[in-house]
Image (tube, rainbow, N blue to C red; front, side, top):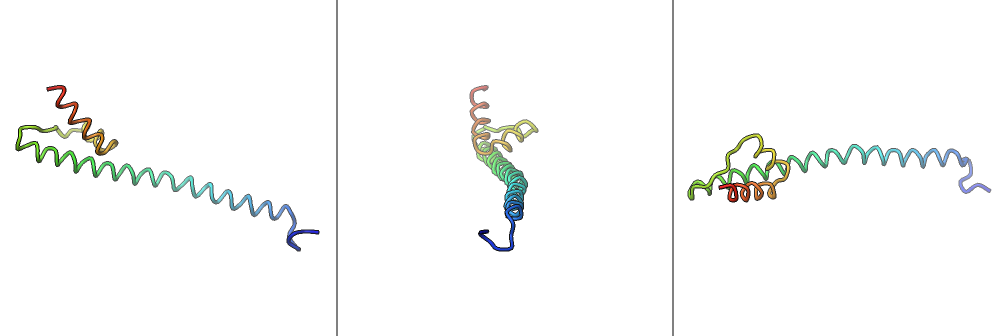
Length: 93
């Protein structure tokens, strides 16, 4: 006796497969968007922190040059990248 009268087993399997496929495709498209937003957030926070370090450092004679390399480090790593740049600048000089 069928569980759902009027529906065959292969139709139920097809619906289940379709739902799983929609879930996987949705997840595949959602993850890159989440990564892009995280990179944008890190980039903004890194830029703000780099600007703040240069603003405060101007009073004590400390600055970090803003160039493509420092911008990439601060952008990809965010706050830890700015801290890394500060430590690098301190240990190099």
